[in-house]
Amino acid sequence: MSAKSSILRHGRLVAGTALAAAVIAGGTIGVAAAATSDHPAAPVAAAAPAAVAQPPAAEQPPEGARATVKVDPNPAAPGGEVTITGNCGGGKGLKKVIGGYPGHQILKDLKIVDPNPDAFKATAKLTTKIGNGVGPVMVDCDGEAGVTLLVTHTPPAGE
Image (cartoon, rainbow, N blue to C red):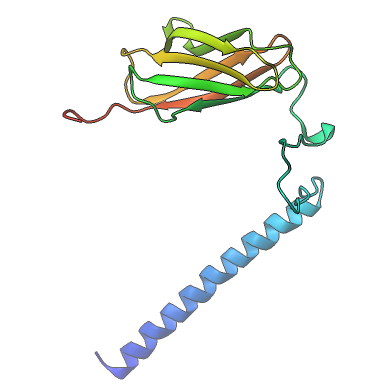
């Protein structure tokens, strides 16, 4: 390789690196500018509180959609057992859990273990009639609702 082509190649590398740095810096500045416009950045807590702090009322979801839901494990295998936990976000307590769509339910043998509005818990098994994909898991907390996505993954044969 000649000295001239080496210099040209090195110059393109430096120019490409500079361009990438400019794009990243511009994106970071744009995000920082956006955070200071209509929606101020969330305050940073010095230490983690014992209970999960709720965002100010202006930043909360609308009334009727404040329940939070978590499915564990996620992703899950068809036929496996899952645990659904969460918080009713002001609702009166866990009343119902729905997994999937009408006519295509993914949860069976559903049991509400604890309907406590501050920390509900339910267990269920996934049907074996599903494959790889994503589906909703919804909760009704008698006044508040919540939804999360459950990923299903069929392990390869022999595992």
